[in-house]
Image (tube, rainbow, N blue to C red; front, side, top):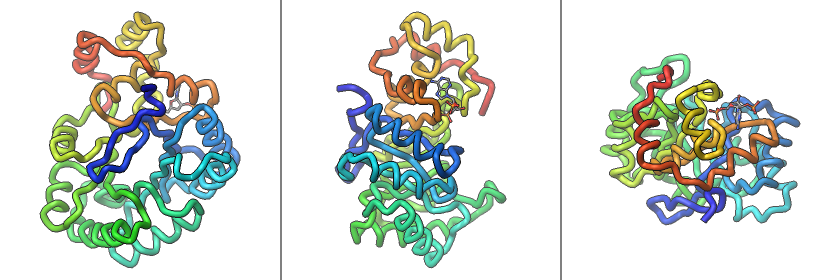
Length: 273
Ligand code: A2P
């Protein structure tokens, strides 16, 4: 089945399209609106946004205007990393759902275990408090799945010890040379889907000569090989582009990297961790 329409299945049985369109760093307004419309026209059925990206309103409008039935599109958004209390989480969810205006969310994530201005600080209690709100929203059917983002093993362990619902997904920074093996194995062993953001290292992989050599053999681009690499590790890629040709290209990844080429890519140090 083509990667664009094929799905992973979350631990609660919900199907999630294997390639998501990432919208991080796409400004609200025409840029987000047009690129989401292009992605949907190209066949993407999974869009990833966040309250912090500031573009939910344009994502929602693009999805509604597309004419594609809502239930055919998978929408992820995220509770801001700075929110570490129950009231804040409830308020953030209401704000995101109002801006998106698409009915229930498909996947709602805690954006990070710590606020962005205090990376690494300890918010275990706050994350548990927020997660209990997520569990309520999930029980109420306001989101079909719940998860986390940027969580490492210790962050996941403290959440799992104190709460009921095991996160359905963990969205982390994942690309050739930065494969987060400990977190990835921890998640995959527990049926927590690993999603990879910045699969092209926000563009820095594109001039990598080692990947280019492999890409040439398959008649594919560096971007396509880099995205395919995630899929073959059962990691869900979230490539971002505002260029129509690249949006289409990034979804055209129905080829198979050989075990030898996968091993070569596994061994690359892309110089960015
Ligand atoms: P643009 O949005 O101008 O098309 P990541 O997904 O790792 O965040 O990488 C996104 C960056 O990579 C953006 O700068 C995007 O540029 C660029 N990019 C995305 N897809 C491709 C592609 N197929 N070829 C070249 N550059 C790409």
